[in-house]
Length: 299
Image: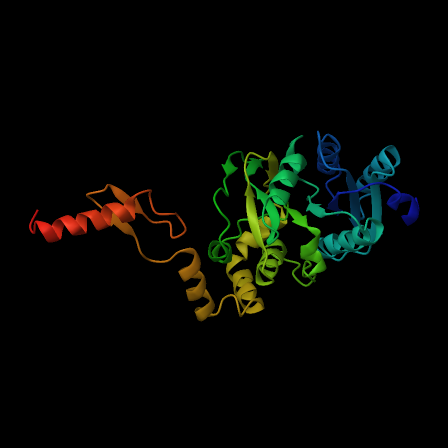
């Protein structure tokens, strides 16, 4: 199928799936995307990243034949998951100039049937500076869940990667020159991507109850990255010297987590959120108490 034939379809979201092996798991991932309900107009790009597993290649081509032109396959020499995602972004931006967002799904993960609709509604209901919507994790393989609930804070994101690559990302983020660093072959390329986006002024928004299934396996790249965490974190700090500079951290702390509390025992008011509005009547009540104290000291 030619690029022109692929592009001759409406597209609002492009799902980009790198493929290196995992033929059975890859088919689960593809099926979960094709099963989306009430989703924006979507297209799928499978990027075969130097895969030498014939079963994986056969699976990709079989899906492409069955679902053309919704599903396109790119083939490139092995460059790592970051290079595969970047190739998908480049192709999508050229093939569908009007697409508004990209979603990155690893071949061993999957999404629930309402994921893209919920992600789309959450992302585009947010302010323009919100560049991506990120979900909670339902862990597959080891069981359990990981919640990323709450407002996105860059300070927290600098300390812990709260976003998997499986986020719906506005096109404007990539148009600002943000991409995945292809030199990061050992992991944390998604963390680096979101920190670069944050450095350009974008922020994330949490996507609750989205239905994202994240597979944890001993041989996965993330498992290897966790073993090498100290070295990778050191490299990450060096890659973002402005963000991790002491003055920047102090400024972020002042904006996002200032060290003060409002506590009024008589009014039963306690507040640790710097952005929370004062309770109704708090200021008037305080002024009334001060006036009463002046009239009747000691009471």
